[in-house]
Image (cartoon, rainbow, N blue to C red; front, top):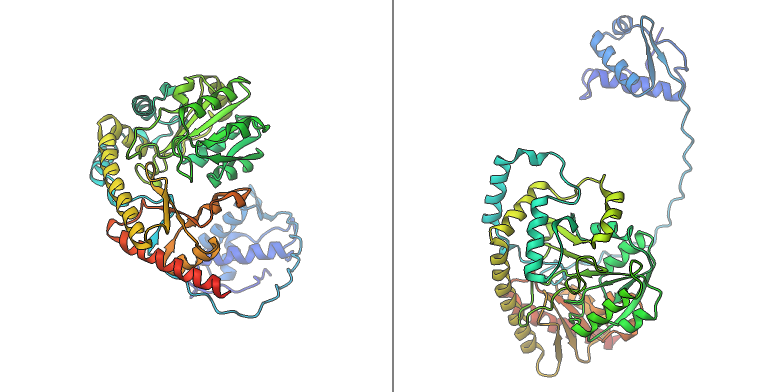
Length: 478
């Protein structure tokens, strides 16, 4: 007589076939049903359990699909060999420290992180109209697309970059991907190492390079950007730079320094490369931006141009792009032509139309006006709250963040802790140093104002002043 390890319960929320399947699977795993044993016929088991034949058949089919049973034509179902899993070694219970009261976390009232943008500036109506038209008129966009990105978008980007950034390229040199980190990860597999990165600099670039097996060399940044002298003294074969708006110091690399950088790469053609991250070149308020490094080097020079729509549109759109030198295209095709695209084709086609119909340039013009007014309001509010001589502001002209150096301020850790207690999310400049933090200007905060509401500038400034005072008092007490 066949016996189940547990009875079927019609009142259970679990279907009977599922209960039977689980019970039989457990018997196979435990060895109660030995390998090679013939299972009862479906009709006889159904009669014994007082269930329908369909219930038994469904359970048997699931067990056969998962390899617990084998179905033999005109013979029935047989138990398959099953090797019991090795016993799990119990992990020792971690020693519990004395319970400490949970620190009270202040809700974030002011988000001054550098990646923030103002969602109210997003062109909702135009973007929605263009995307709706595509959804109804282009069902073919549901199929897989070109791994380099939509041809229409790459052509639109090539035209835009040539006109506004002086980039020299054709559409076939452009690769579209879901974020700068993704593209940098692909690129790292095509380039030699080690990689030179700015110090202070963009921490995710270092993470991507190291995750891809490239060693990093951390080179100092001065008032002209990355030190080419330090680069020449290193063994780096790749140099990652943000020349138009160095992150996070905000300095712009002058034309002479750019020429020196290109000469460094030209000393070993095909063995040295420059990655130009032009992440927020659209936002330059008081002076005209210098042309791109890529434009100075030419379409087949040693520069890979990298940029993103995260700040000009929104981080959630996840559209970034890079321009490869022509001589790197065969290597990219060989390594990645079988990959799938990582950005929705509908989003890509929407952006292509957004650019081609002139909406993008008008949108950027509106953003510049709004962000420039916010920068000015924030700078004035900070100067008013701290008073003459207490505060030095830097990096005001380009980008969506600025540096605020506070005179006679407490250590960065105390200052950030006091700001967090007041609901202010920010980071000190020292957090962007990979090495040599002693060279960091003291008590300098990186204030991103992209997501800040205009009406809150004065309240934010007063809050920062209060946090600074509290940090001084706390530091003095300790």
